[in-house]
Length: 214
Image (cartoon, one colour):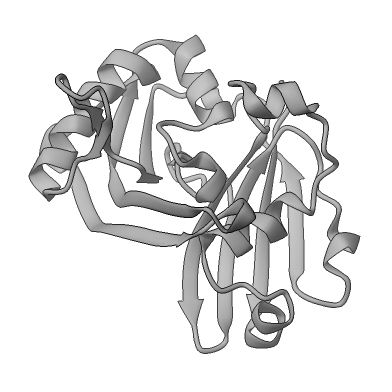
Protein backbone atom coordinates (compact mmCIF):
# COMPACT_ATOMS: atom_id res chain seq x y z
CA UNK A 1 0.00 0.00 0.00
CA UNK A 2 1.42 3.38 -0.98
CA UNK A 3 1.20 6.03 1.71
CA UNK A 4 1.29 9.83 1.63
CA UNK A 5 3.06 11.93 4.27
CA UNK A 6 1.89 15.52 4.64
CA UNK A 7 2.49 18.55 6.82
CA UNK A 8 -0.32 21.01 7.46
CA UNK A 9 0.72 24.45 8.73
CA UNK A 10 -1.90 26.79 10.15
CA UNK A 11 -1.28 30.34 11.29
CA UNK A 12 -3.42 31.97 13.97
CA UNK A 13 -5.85 33.37 11.43
CA UNK A 14 -6.33 29.93 9.85
CA UNK A 15 -6.92 28.29 13.24
CA UNK A 16 -9.60 30.87 13.99
CA UNK A 17 -11.20 30.76 10.53
CA UNK A 18 -11.36 26.94 10.56
CA UNK A 19 -12.78 27.03 14.13
CA UNK A 20 -10.17 24.68 15.58
CA UNK A 21 -10.70 24.66 19.33
CA UNK A 22 -10.37 21.01 20.42
CA UNK A 23 -9.43 17.54 19.10
CA UNK A 24 -12.82 17.02 17.46
CA UNK A 25 -12.68 20.26 15.47
CA UNK A 26 -9.14 19.41 14.35
CA UNK A 27 -10.38 15.93 13.37
CA UNK A 28 -13.12 17.60 11.32
CA UNK A 29 -10.64 19.79 9.42
CA UNK A 30 -8.16 16.96 8.76
CA UNK A 31 -10.78 14.50 7.55
CA UNK A 32 -12.36 17.15 5.30
CA UNK A 33 -9.14 17.14 3.23
CA UNK A 34 -9.79 13.60 1.98
CA UNK A 35 -12.45 11.93 -0.14
CA UNK A 36 -14.70 9.75 2.02
CA UNK A 37 -14.20 6.19 0.76
CA UNK A 38 -15.96 4.24 3.54
CA UNK A 39 -19.67 3.40 3.63
CA UNK A 40 -21.71 3.60 6.83
CA UNK A 41 -21.14 -0.07 7.67
CA UNK A 42 -17.37 0.37 7.38
CA UNK A 43 -17.48 3.46 9.59
CA UNK A 44 -19.40 1.59 12.29
CA UNK A 45 -17.07 -1.41 12.08
CA UNK A 46 -13.32 -1.79 12.43
CA UNK A 47 -12.32 -0.65 8.93
CA UNK A 48 -9.50 1.92 9.32
CA UNK A 49 -10.12 5.40 7.96
CA UNK A 50 -6.76 5.44 6.19
CA UNK A 51 -5.98 8.79 7.88
CA UNK A 52 -3.66 9.40 10.83
CA UNK A 53 -2.47 12.71 12.23
CA UNK A 54 -0.38 14.13 15.04
CA UNK A 55 -0.76 17.71 16.27
CA UNK A 56 2.74 19.02 16.91
CA UNK A 57 1.41 22.20 18.47
CA UNK A 58 3.15 25.48 17.86
CA UNK A 59 3.42 28.99 19.20
CA UNK A 60 1.77 32.37 18.79
CA UNK A 61 2.37 32.18 15.04
CA UNK A 62 0.44 28.95 14.51
CA UNK A 63 0.69 25.19 14.64
CA UNK A 64 1.90 22.19 12.62
CA UNK A 65 0.06 18.91 12.06
CA UNK A 66 1.65 15.78 10.59
CA UNK A 67 -0.62 13.58 8.46
CA UNK A 68 -0.20 10.06 7.09
CA UNK A 69 -2.81 8.72 4.69
CA UNK A 70 -3.51 6.00 2.15
CA UNK A 71 -4.75 8.57 -0.39
CA UNK A 72 -3.77 12.06 -1.40
CA UNK A 73 -5.17 15.05 0.51
CA UNK A 74 -7.02 17.79 -1.33
CA UNK A 75 -5.43 21.12 -0.33
CA UNK A 76 -8.13 23.09 -2.14
CA UNK A 77 -10.51 22.05 0.65
CA UNK A 78 -8.68 24.49 2.93
CA UNK A 79 -9.64 27.43 0.77
CA UNK A 80 -7.33 30.32 1.55
CA UNK A 81 -6.42 28.97 4.99
CA UNK A 82 -3.28 27.01 5.76
CA UNK A 83 -0.44 25.43 3.81
CA UNK A 84 -0.41 21.72 3.00
CA UNK A 85 2.68 19.98 1.65
CA UNK A 86 2.55 16.28 0.81
CA UNK A 87 4.77 13.61 -0.71
CA UNK A 88 4.76 9.82 -1.09
CA UNK A 89 6.45 7.82 1.64
CA UNK A 90 9.74 6.72 0.02
CA UNK A 91 10.03 3.16 -1.18
CA UNK A 92 11.99 1.16 1.34
CA UNK A 93 11.26 3.53 4.21
CA UNK A 94 9.96 0.66 6.32
CA UNK A 95 12.80 -1.70 5.44
CA UNK A 96 15.14 -0.52 8.20
CA UNK A 97 15.62 -2.55 11.34
CA UNK A 98 15.93 0.30 13.87
CA UNK A 99 14.25 3.69 14.18
CA UNK A 100 13.94 6.62 16.50
CA UNK A 101 10.27 7.22 17.12
CA UNK A 102 7.71 9.49 18.69
CA UNK A 103 4.02 8.72 19.07
CA UNK A 104 1.03 10.19 20.84
CA UNK A 105 -0.68 7.17 22.31
CA UNK A 106 -3.95 6.40 24.11
CA UNK A 107 -2.76 4.16 26.97
CA UNK A 108 -5.64 1.98 28.19
CA UNK A 109 -6.14 -1.41 29.79
CA UNK A 110 -9.32 -3.47 30.04
CA UNK A 111 -10.35 -3.95 33.66
CA UNK A 112 -10.59 -7.66 34.40
CA UNK A 113 -13.70 -7.27 36.56
CA UNK A 114 -15.79 -4.67 34.75
CA UNK A 115 -14.32 -5.29 31.26
CA UNK A 116 -14.27 -1.52 30.80
CA UNK A 117 -11.29 0.30 29.32
CA UNK A 118 -9.44 2.29 31.96
CA UNK A 119 -6.60 4.76 31.34
CA UNK A 120 -3.01 4.03 32.35
CA UNK A 121 -2.04 7.22 34.17
CA UNK A 122 1.42 7.09 35.77
CA UNK A 123 4.36 7.64 33.44
CA UNK A 124 6.32 4.56 34.53
CA UNK A 125 3.17 2.46 34.09
CA UNK A 126 2.62 3.95 30.63
CA UNK A 127 6.20 3.05 29.66
CA UNK A 128 5.72 -0.53 30.86
CA UNK A 129 2.35 -0.80 29.11
CA UNK A 130 3.83 0.55 25.88
CA UNK A 131 6.73 -1.93 25.81
CA UNK A 132 4.37 -4.83 26.44
CA UNK A 133 1.89 -3.71 23.77
CA UNK A 134 4.68 -3.17 21.23
CA UNK A 135 6.07 -6.66 21.72
CA UNK A 136 2.62 -8.27 21.70
CA UNK A 137 0.75 -6.37 18.99
CA UNK A 138 2.79 -3.86 16.99
CA UNK A 139 5.74 -5.75 15.52
CA UNK A 140 8.58 -4.02 17.32
CA UNK A 141 10.52 -3.99 20.56
CA UNK A 142 10.91 -0.62 22.29
CA UNK A 143 14.17 0.08 24.10
CA UNK A 144 12.87 0.27 27.68
CA UNK A 145 16.00 1.96 29.04
CA UNK A 146 15.79 4.84 26.56
CA UNK A 147 12.01 5.27 26.60
CA UNK A 148 10.63 8.69 27.59
CA UNK A 149 7.04 9.55 28.41
CA UNK A 150 7.15 13.32 27.97
CA UNK A 151 3.47 14.17 28.51
CA UNK A 152 0.53 12.37 30.09
CA UNK A 153 -2.89 14.00 30.34
CA UNK A 154 -6.61 13.45 29.85
CA UNK A 155 -8.60 15.37 27.24
CA UNK A 156 -12.32 16.01 27.53
CA UNK A 157 -14.33 17.51 24.68
CA UNK A 158 -17.53 17.17 22.68
CA UNK A 159 -17.54 14.84 19.69
CA UNK A 160 -20.04 14.19 16.93
CA UNK A 161 -23.55 15.04 18.01
CA UNK A 162 -22.13 16.82 21.07
CA UNK A 163 -21.43 13.49 22.72
CA UNK A 164 -18.83 13.79 25.51
CA UNK A 165 -15.45 12.23 24.70
CA UNK A 166 -12.66 11.53 27.18
CA UNK A 167 -9.23 10.41 25.95
CA UNK A 168 -6.14 9.64 27.99
CA UNK A 169 -3.09 10.70 26.00
CA UNK A 170 0.66 10.31 26.39
CA UNK A 171 3.63 11.20 24.20
CA UNK A 172 6.21 8.42 24.05
CA UNK A 173 9.68 8.77 22.53
CA UNK A 174 12.60 6.40 22.13
CA UNK A 175 14.16 3.84 19.82
CA UNK A 176 12.73 0.62 18.50
CA UNK A 177 13.85 -2.56 16.78
CA UNK A 178 11.57 -4.21 14.22
CA UNK A 179 10.72 -7.79 15.20
CA UNK A 180 7.94 -8.56 12.68
CA UNK A 181 8.27 -6.62 9.44
CA UNK A 182 4.72 -7.24 8.20
CA UNK A 183 3.11 -6.33 11.52
CA UNK A 184 5.34 -3.28 11.86
CA UNK A 185 4.29 -2.08 8.41
CA UNK A 186 0.64 -2.52 9.38
CA UNK A 187 1.24 -0.59 12.61
CA UNK A 188 2.76 2.30 10.66
CA UNK A 189 0.01 2.35 8.04
CA UNK A 190 -2.97 1.91 10.36
CA UNK A 191 -1.63 3.49 13.54
CA UNK A 192 -1.30 1.94 16.97
CA UNK A 193 -3.64 1.90 19.93
CA UNK A 194 -6.98 3.64 20.27
CA UNK A 195 -8.02 7.26 19.73
CA UNK A 196 -6.64 7.43 16.20
CA UNK A 197 -9.49 9.62 14.95
CA UNK A 198 -8.40 12.25 17.47
CA UNK A 199 -4.67 12.46 16.84
CA UNK A 200 -3.30 9.33 18.51
CA UNK A 201 -1.40 6.41 17.01
CA UNK A 202 0.77 7.94 14.28
CA UNK A 203 4.26 6.46 14.51
CA UNK A 204 6.67 9.27 13.64
CA UNK A 205 9.78 7.40 12.52
CA UNK A 206 13.34 8.43 11.77
CA UNK A 207 15.56 5.71 10.29
CA UNK A 208 19.24 6.63 10.54
CA UNK A 209 19.40 10.38 9.72
CA UNK A 210 16.34 10.55 7.48
CA UNK A 211 13.26 12.40 8.70
CA UNK A 212 10.13 11.48 6.71
CA UNK A 213 8.32 14.73 7.53
CA UNK A 214 11.23 17.12 6.94
